[in-house]
Image (cartoon, rainbow, N blue to C red):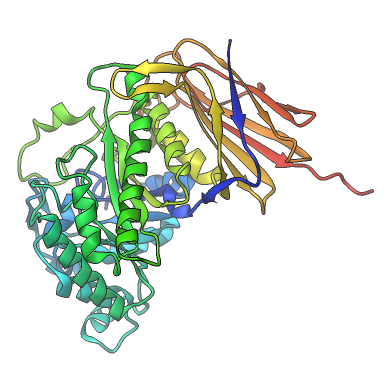
Length: 505
């Protein structure tokens, strides 16, 4: 059995976990909305048409914030089409996904749904085909108390109280030629600056997210980030990152190494943000919003067969397998290891569209990636300890030398608990792992959860929803201050340690 060591010190901290790092994303795309979170006439839907089975699974995930309404969709979105009486809402062509948008679910419905889901809203404004004035009007509709045209319009639609949305995306992937109204870095930086300025004049309490590159492989990556921030540094709070990974070559070891690429991506963008800060003698850090991340490749071929101008087609419906869950776990660990700068993140997306939850007319079920996401969201609270790893390595085709063990430790001082998240990427061997826990006197192992399967391609379906599901392990022990465990080959692990207090008689 191979050996590995986790090294932590309670005084060496990376940063506090912002709960919004466990956010997700709902776009008007495929069956994310229609048939996903909303389906009128279904027996499992409530009086507003919200699917109760989906809501229960979303609540299980404890999703703190959900980005809406796009994605590519937002760059052609007229928010006014999505509010007011449903009978008067126009159906529109959506050029982003070549479908018909009925607008029967819109801004206010999403606000209601978010409350039921226990999530906050992260709203995106259209800076593709529209601009600062429309963004300011949308903010007035959502956040202004009353006595103005747009706030009174909201009241006339039955919403007396403001939605009070605090986090706003300034467009989406504006560097991409697939984007309606895409722009150069200079063009986008200027409009982002003016939009954020006007919005913050109206509501100084909001935070804004500027668009970074659409992905690490964009030819303008790096230069785009620098130019955009050079224009809008003073007006924005976060810079976005988007990245998806796939296993098209069916090389599992290389696929699981993608988290190293993600780590390099984050470090690179942090460096650019800090370079602009230094140039401007700035007094604030631009933090990161990794507001699109996931595995995405399974559905690419089937999506080529979709007929144009349909309504809510089965689009981007990746069926996730076990190895996808391992990479999602490693991606979560990677972002947590950068918790000092990654403050917001959105798993893209939440239901049906490259999502942890799938639905049919007869039910909803958890995909394999549901579990690491849920475990991180539920247990990953507190402060990230600077987690060092000594473990065997392997050579990946794309990313070079990669550790077989991804790991991060989080200390919830208030709850007196430490949570270890770990992925053993080794496809052949278990790992015998140790960690010096003497600084955490009185802590004991509470639970060790494992997600593993013999078949890397195993999937969950409506007929067999528990094919890949967590089990409990008795391998973890804490004796004389030394923690020891076994992380099985190709496994996702959650170990929870809690301080035990002696009962006073």
